[in-house]
Image (tube, rainbow, N blue to C red; front, side, top):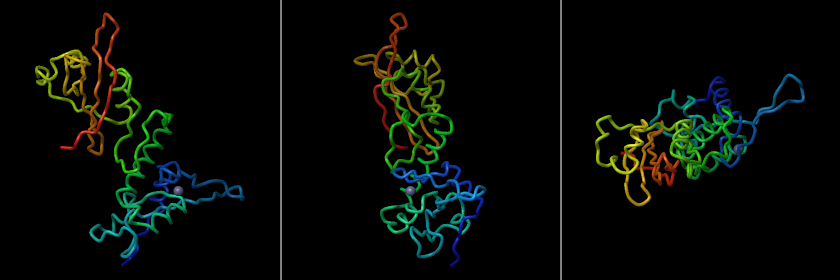
Length: 234
Ligand SMILES: [Zn+2]
């Protein structure tokens, strides 16, 4: 059985996609820096295999092709310590966990690249594979929506014929629909005047955002984000 090593092109792209930092969320060590010779650099990063390069290696998957095994999809950028750690304990460092590290590390690098401070996002559990969720609780729905779109969440738009649906005819429902917020799924005219809005990300996750408060333009009153939760994928 041949070992499917990564090409130097794959390694370079992999490292740079995470700003040359270790992808382990509790490590994030810098993996390159200057060498004592002025025209060289030191690299302590490793392109690790998510599923092993060869039969018998950690997390080996017999079913995948050799081409996939050596592709960037099967690679994660780590420091030397973390690379050794994940291969010494594949039961703990599963394919699912490593994929979630990679997604989070790339998302973090993108936010840093775009100058969006990390503190604006909820910390993600290591097992999460979803687009980061900005800190939206307490914001007006308009502001929260803007931040969600910037983070990569897409509104799950209802068809125009949904406008007459009784579920969104109550409370603020009509107001939001007329604003063009066709991701509204439910509105309540009583109590805290809750409205619910649906979003989805590139990984197929569904996020529901709940607002509270009535929109009354004359009083400058508006609805704020009360809660959010992941909806079951259907
Ligand atoms: Zn590390």
